[in-house]
Amino acid sequence: MKVKKDKVKIITLGCSKNLVDSEHIMAQLNASDIELTDDEKKAGTIIINTCGFIESAKQESIDTILAAVENKKKGRIKNLYVAGCLSDRYKKDLEKDIPEVDMYFGATSRPKTIIGILNELGVDYKRNLIGERLLTTPAHYAYLKISEGCDNPCSFCAIPIMRGRHVSKPMNEILTEARLLAKKGVKELVVIGQDTTFWGMDIDRKRRIANVLEKLSAIDGIEWIRLMYAYPSRFPYDLISAIRDNEKICNYIDIPIQHISDNVLKSMRRGITKKNLIEVLEKLRNDVPGIAIRTTVLTGYPGETDKDFSELLDFVKEFRFDRLGVFTYSEEDGTHSANIADDISVKEKTARQKAILDAQREISEENNRNSLGKVVKVLIDRKESNYYIGRTYKDAPEIDQEVYIDSNAELKKGEFYNVMIFDYEQFDLFGELEIK
Image 1 (tube, rainbow, N blue to C red):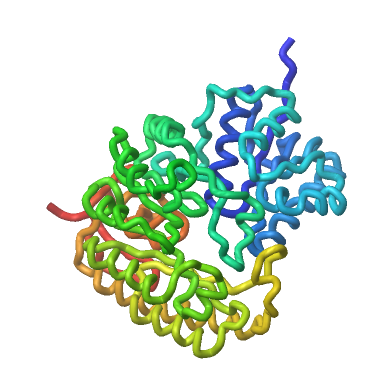
Image 2 (tube, rainbow, N blue to C red):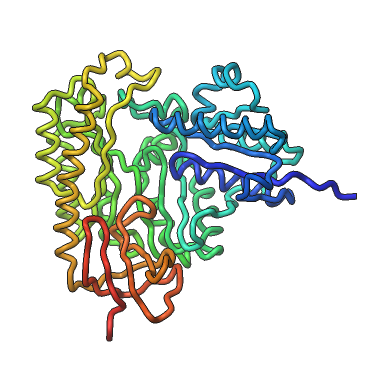
């Protein structure tokens, strides 16, 4: 007689890298006839894949764990497992402070984490499923993680503590996973890692991200390849020609600069000067016509003077990034910057963040105004109310702006359409199908 197994719910917190890990776990569980559910009331087992990147993310993870513990105490669930970055970084503390969790798993060795969870659930790890994932994104796009860990010594970042040294995923595994995704109907690959431009350095001391993207572009069914998390220091310039010359590689790059002041960049241990950083950014913009450059900046870093901040704000206004996100500094245990006095108040950090966001809002609105009357290629993600919602090549899923399309004709999710832009807001566009 077949024993009925508990249904499992996986709660994923944090970044897209965590999402990919959860999707691999889900594929293994699914192959072992363990039913997955999104309804916590129907689940006998909860797996929480935590984030430990910044203070707010850590708090969200802890709150989620405590809520699940309460459900366990009330008999609503039988088993509770915690994995991911927070679990890896604070495993001993968590075991002591929240002993109700059945087991904590780290993030530095993903296969071991998956195997450990499966063993606890009484099933075996299936090595023939390497590369298989149960997608939680819309079927037409997926994140493709090409590495684990990070070798960069950024003073404020705890990722190397949680994820360990950089390890490039072997090329054959990357391509196998990408082909499996293409067979599932994925058309857009969003390439991710802690530092995607570092791929290959641990193999033969060469940065070979351009080669990775070129090989991915040869896979039938893949139409867009989008690169995220490109570290600017020691940037591989052959990547620029790969983006420019390959139609499948989107003219888009996410390149977090964090700051522009030499004083702050040095203290952050970013391994690059303002001069060299500008050279990389200008070469990208000059050599790749129409490229969309996304960045992330960090303000309120210890010792960031008014002059340093003004330099950053002026640069944001002058360079006019297409997309931009802003974090405020928070001290992270075990990082180099934790030894520096956090001398900027929360109020001042928030004010500096707002000033940058206000500047970017004006830039975005002007860029969108300049899109009026233009025809753009849009990939449809979903439908909400009367609108079909999609993205241009300038926009990564979930973090960038979208195009709202009012159409009487039925549009298919995962298909491309030519759309004429007739209206805009600060961070969104409105369009209609091009009339031929």
